[in-house]
Amino acid sequence: MKKLKKNVDTDKAGELLELTLEGINWRFRWCPAGTFTMGDDSGYATPHKVTLTRGFWLGETQVTQEFWQAVMGKNPSYFKGAKLPVDRISWNSCQEFIAKLNGLNAAPADFTFSLPSEAQWEYACRAGSKTAYCFGDDEKQLNDYGWYYGNSGIKTHPVGQKKANGWGLHDMHGNVWEWCLDWYGTYPNDDVTDPSGVSSGIFRVLRGGCWYRNAGYCRSASRYNYTPESSINFLGLRIALVLQ
Image 1 (tube, one colour):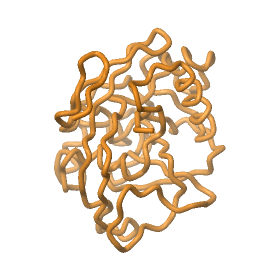
Image 2 (cartoon, rainbow, N blue to C red):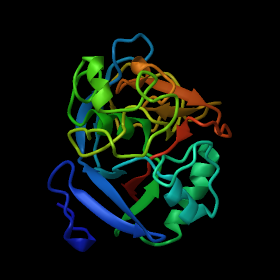
Image 3 (cartoon, rainbow, N blue to C red):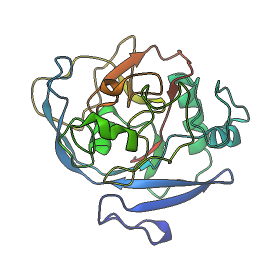
Image 4 (spheres, one colour):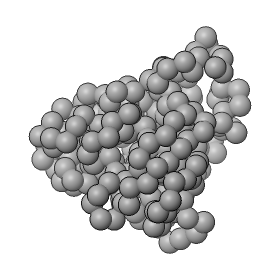
């Protein structure tokens, strides 16, 4: 067990860590080391066993516009609102945001801010589940967990309004697509440990679905991609704290 500042430890999944970053209180949930089946039988996300040997913290919600504004000094979003997820964010601008966060020296000892890897993202989204969504296979229940084409009114919504998954993470299904660290590529057929994706590519991975896509795109295993310079009003992010 690794002790962290503020008397937070890593005994259990979903443990809460709160940090104050540029005057904004931000909450993270602990995702312990473990093994899971990544992908599904959709035909383009080959199921394979993944082992993550190190736990990590993941933002309880998507990064909001007020948080982005506090760090970056500007808000590029199409849909405006302090508690709305920041949108029109490119993968490249995510790296600038994260570099500024790391410059604050606010991370717990031995941890650094990062985008989650694709494997970390799906592992956290599933929160121990093996079904199409974190809550099961019935997409009708998605109304309780995320904003998608069927209930969004074709716009984003304030973060944290829907039910959390089993590890306390909100909006893992829908609202805005979330950038991941990896290049987009074909999954391996064999079991892997601490994967970081293919070594190069044209597109970066996006996960989670969004306000203008149907329920199928919000599945835990669903994948999407855009070029790293793309900035569209359904692209956002969620930050992680990973061991250095």
